[in-house]
Structures are given as C-alpha cells and as structure tokens.
Picture 1 (tube, rainbow, N blue to C red):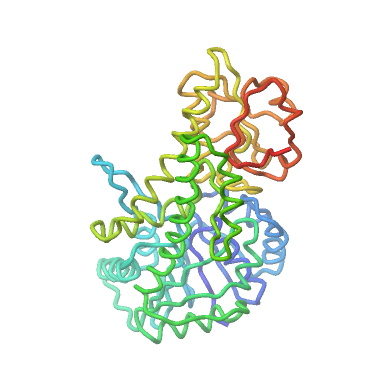
Picture 2: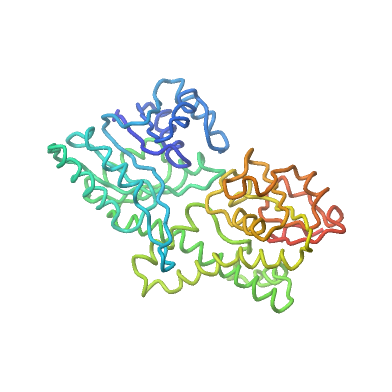
Length: 407
C-alpha cells in the first residue's frame, strides 16, 4: 500500500491521517507544533471531536500513525494546512497562502518520481497550480530533477461534530492537474470513502468547494438581514420565519449573531478576490454576516447599564464544538470588553479563554453567570443551554441571538 505523509494535523489533517492509518496505510503526520506532535504520538488528541480520540489511539497503537515536525519520503503527500485571509490596508480580504507555500516547498527534499501531491486545504482557484510551481522552484534550488509528479485538489466536506461519519459517507471531488492525477487520487480515497467520488480538473474542484460554502453564506445572510429588518419594524423574526417556511417551496434558515468557522466565514472572500466585479451578491452576503456581530453589540450596550455584568453564553463558532475560529461570539464578547463592560463567558467546551479575552473576561460556569449577570446574551445554542427558561432569567435583560429561549 502507498505510504502517506499528511502535512497539518488540525481539524482536517488529523482525522484524515488517522482514518488512512486504520485502513492499513503507513502514515506520517507532520505539524509545526512540537506539542501537537507529542500529544498525537502518545495516542491523545489536541482538538475536540466525537470518537476522534478512539480513532487516533487505535492508529497510533497499530504503529501505522506517527507524528513529526518534518516531512519524510512517502508515496503520497497530503497538504491540510490553514488557508486564512488577511485584511489589506484598503479593507480588502486577501487569501493568505503562506502556509500552503511553506508546506509545498518543504516537500522538495523528499519527493520522488511518480509521487502524488494532494491539496486538501480549501483554497482559491489556481492554488494547486501554485503548489506545483512552488515545489518545482524549490526542487530547482536543490538541483533536483523529479519527473512524473502528480497534483490534485481533493477538498473535504465534513462538519465539526460529525467529522468521522462524514469523512466516510460524503461524496468527494478529486480534481487533478491531469486526468491521471485525479484517477490516482480517487483510488486513494476509495480505500475509506463509501460514497461517490467525482473526477474533474483542479480549478473546478477548487471553485466547487468555495461555491458550496458561499451558497450557505448567502442563505444565512438572507436570514440575518431579515432579523435586522424585523428588529427595525418590531416583528418577531422567529415567528416570521416559522410562518414563511410553511410555503412548500420556502426554507429560510435561522438567523444568528454572525457566521464563524474557517469555511463559511472565509471561503466566499476567495471568490470575491478572484472576481471582484462579478461577485456582487457574494460580497454583500459577506458584509451582511460580518456586520451582524456589531448589531448584537449595539443591542447589548443599549440594554446594559453603566455597571452591568454581561453573561455571554457560548464562544464557539457553532453549537457543541470547541472550535473558536472566526467565531462571531468571540468577536461580540471582545467588543463588549472593549466597551468597558464586565464580561462573564460561559463556554463548556473549552478550559481557557481565547487570547482576545484573556485578562478581560472571566470563564465561568452557567450557574455562576446566571447568578451574577444583569444582562444575558445567548450566542451559541449549545446543548448545555437548551433547558434555559424565561423564569430562570427573570429580572435580567435577555438578548437571544438564536431564538432558543421560548418558554
């Protein structure tokens, strides 16, 4: 069986490396963090995901999964590193491909003829071609000539909290710079993917993943914009959506405090950056969703008195996970702390506050927050908050961004 080297052991790389290892392949997982490497080599995990600890422990104990801070020779190299964006001085969101470039260049001493290089990271259109160019440039620096390298983009489509199930059961796209690369990638993923695997070219695969998340972003923006309109007109948005959804061809999503995570909050900007004149709707959807946390902050500040204590229920970007990336809840809590309010953060899935809140907020239990707060802001509909009632919040001002507290 081909050996694998997976670069990046985060929310995508670690589950991918582990599932390949449990299918009998020899896998080296690579991460720049020595503590992550040490944690995985001891059979433990550094992220929260149901059943991932069991999978990693089995993979490590089998001897098929090892972790290191540097790559090594393999038959297949999978890049699963972050692809964030940075904000330029003029306010434009520009893709940051520095992690992908560093990973691609790091392969130069180790690749051999016929190796398959797969980019799994969600990336702007044309990034797989850049991976090829970066690697070839680094090979030239080393005076190495390696023939027959194959390149493909194979984006994941998995949801935090259901990663292991969806990694296996969701359809997959394999987009190659050549048909041969796409075919080899399909053969690789077929070892664990039970759903259909579709072949295409790399650019289409890159844009398909971005399109999937942009579609979701636009639909969320519609719901969030409705919530802004309802606030202005004095209408209950939750009731409005419930009634509108009784139409047989209408399915409006639920509004929230914004959009977070590393996918929906980021990927549409890659399309906007690539085609700014054409991506008008996508840009507007992003602006609507990016503005929603500021609306929530304004609501809280209007409700809060001078010495108010504000309980922020939830910091994660979505329910029942520990992932704080691009979280609107963290942004809201940070702005409230900036405004000088006393902030109590309740996040049952983490043990420490993010950097933006350290020394500026308290991480407390739900019971402590309810006992001390004069204003309660429900930001994430975690299961831990599902039993909250208006009776428990009597005498407090409530900002419910999820419409969860109804009885």
